[in-house]
Length: 289
Image (tube, rainbow, N blue to C red; front, side):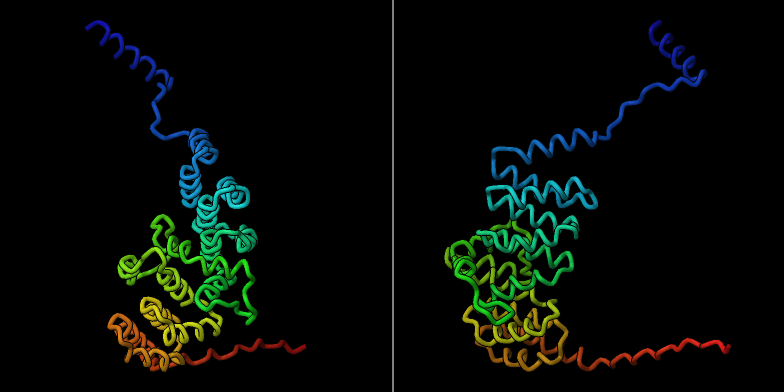
């Protein structure tokens, strides 16, 4: 009992004299946190490095995190790590990395190229749409043919199918078609990736992408791709594509017909909305001399 009274007395003495008693802190040290991340970034396991790089995406406005992701994108020997780095740069909003992401289009692995393209779109760089256009159409927007290496990447059916099935690569935006895409996925089926490419082109301001989506909705032999094309057509808000959407109402697949129907109704509504009157120009008054 004496030791309790002594402890209380000491507390009163120190409290009265203004001497602060050290308090334990529950907040982790930033230095310790970076030590943990750096250990993961240098791990011998490809999976661990990829996971570590991936979580860098939540650290926005931090030059150190951006540099760590760029280093992984440019130097890591494993494609899974480079793809994770490309994705992290987009998630953290690293606009200063846009040129490095564009340079990643020359990567030998399609997962890295697609991740870089998606991040560019996230960062407001329209160059990212070029990859999705090439995936959907098999050619570049310029009308020139793809290089042999690019053709090899896009026709690697096993690799492309793998991309569609890797839940860890969160940049494939199936939207409402996700479950159908997952069920359709087989070892040689590229339709989920092609459908994702179509959906990504929904917001590409280039009219060529609108034409590509119209062609895909009419000619593609994969119903999932046709359905995705109509979904993207609707999201473009371009009444000029209502004819392409209406053609899908006769598709032999119900999933495609309902996607086309929604596009027709939406584009009709968009076209029926009253156009905003142009704002009158304001002229500055000139003072008389």
